[in-house]
Amino acid sequence: MLKKTILTCTVFAMLFIINNDLNAQQMETSPRDGAYDRNLQQERVPIAYPHLREADVFWQHRVWREIDTRQKMNLYFRYPNQYFVDILRDHIIENEITAYSAMDDRFTDVMTSQEVQDIGAGTDTIWVVDPVTLEETQEVVVNEFNPESVIKIRLKEDWIFDKQTSTMIVRIIGIAPIIQNVDEQGNIRGDEVMFWVYYPDARDVLAKYDAFNEGNYAVRLSFEDIFEMRYFDSFIIKEVNVHDRRVVDYATGVDAILESDRIKEKIFNFEQDLWSY
Image (cartoon, one colour):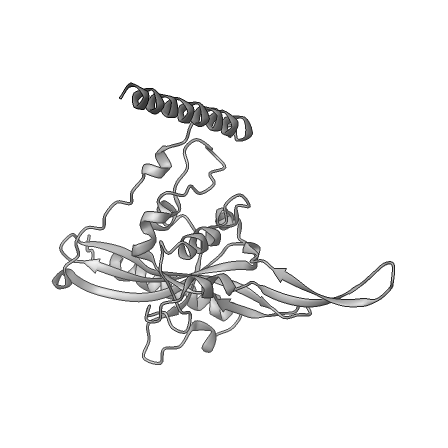
């Protein structure tokens, strides 16, 4: 019995020493990047939406809008240390967020993590000349996903007037990153929707990631805050209509911009016209 006790204590002591050595090595190789530990962001949870009854919905309008990540106000979506599209892709690959096919925006066809990984990535075959023998051989080059190729983010949202509280509220329904489609010669062929994400299911994840704050690095909003507080610049590309047309289907250039502004004004004026002074 005494031998068993001594053996058990010896094993625990060895494990304790090994664990301390591993922790010491980890501290030596991975020092803390900052003056203090940042733990609050992992504890953040989004504020739950208040319940909305169908009987209280006095008016509703659905619009689709796009965020151009190259604009100055939207640059935190392209922060090199943490691209917004990488957050979505990583959690889709880890099966923490569900991705839906870009064939439509009704969240009908679920995509696999492998299908998402293949978007914007692939393999190419190139000819390589041996500097010694001058012989040409074919080599397979793996092209990894480039987050800088995502230049826009599409939103699908509902504007609702709640007569119970007499307020106009907006609820984002879906998010879709848009990648720039380039051919083998480097020519831009157009924009392509990668996938759709049901925004209410992604709020818990987005609340745990900080967006870059140039004014105060210590106090940063999460990406969930960015969307909920409307801290982005965008333009409307479509409103719900009987023909299911986009703005570019009947207006181009400056006329498309004016049409986008007209839709914004229509939503704003509806709320203002409900009040009398």
